[in-house]
Image (cartoon, rainbow, N blue to C red; front, top):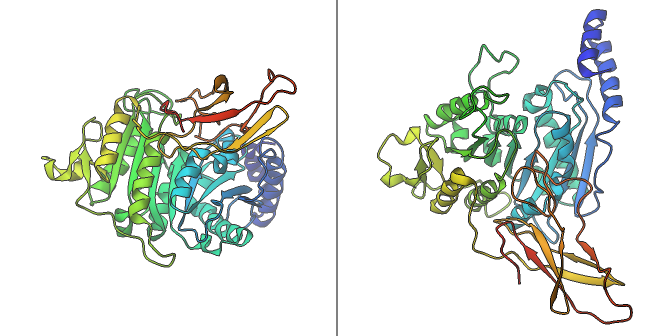
Length: 454
């Protein structure tokens, strides 16, 4: 039985709430424990996982949820947690199962001694997404419980108190923005891809309850990011309502002095595309300035004198001191470096990079099988590896990276900006090696900008 059919049945039967809630929870749990949520990568250290069943209590989360966290090896004290929140629908929810394993997002987390957390809400097919993407429906409480439980499991009790950096796609953007409205003092920055919270009651969206905009939220750096075919150019498509919602959210926050910008992806609709090549540097810049020096210290305010401004549907940004029209109508950018990347992104998403990626390490050879490890390039991630044998090119790994939504990536990419399953291993088998011969191998990392490591 589907979620919608279950609700209809309970209404027809006119069962008391207590009995109905128990039946609903039992049915949803039975559904959720079936595919597609029963296949996920192992969570051996430095990964940790908790899973909570659906609740039967009013106001609590009615779906099961699975949280996986990655803790940077050898980190002594965490300074924050980066949350990679998937969107609505069964496919997007399932994609959250690999979010914590993304090497590019791990590079950002490690750079700031942060954990990387990826939820996976086990939403049944065609069920009501608002029951988790509105954090007031139990997901905010479940999230904070998971931080305590994962903190104990990993030996990092500070996980439950450190600041949050939030990234969300679609319904995940609604969730991340909602968390800013509810807990502005906890959020270092939030990137909202194709989804924003409602700040004013909308008679056309009666199923969505508006949030109140607190003054403290005006100090949280925010970025509204969406595809040009989500109502900017294509005003009739399935996602045409995304731009009007973003535009309203932006003007509501910015008119009160909020630190919010808009980055329109010129190549996409609702898919995430190449947004990570701006989102990760943007979050990196915000975290550098916002995270406190000590685990118990307050978050820092963003400096006012480094900001750049840009028309929200334009392509050129200038320093705040040079902006000649109303600054509260323009998108906010934290500094000149991000402004440069923003101008590249809104033109063609080709954000430039001049620094090579880190070199692979721990190369091992067992028989004719090679294995290694690597850290992804913070700016441009990881596209592929080049294998050399005895100083000569031997192979590329993978032979052809897959990403229908943007730049090819070593780990491939799903619709909601997470790696595909099964995870792509760092290994290569040399089937042409001569038996009994000694060979010397080298592995070179290549980022998505085409730059090679040492």
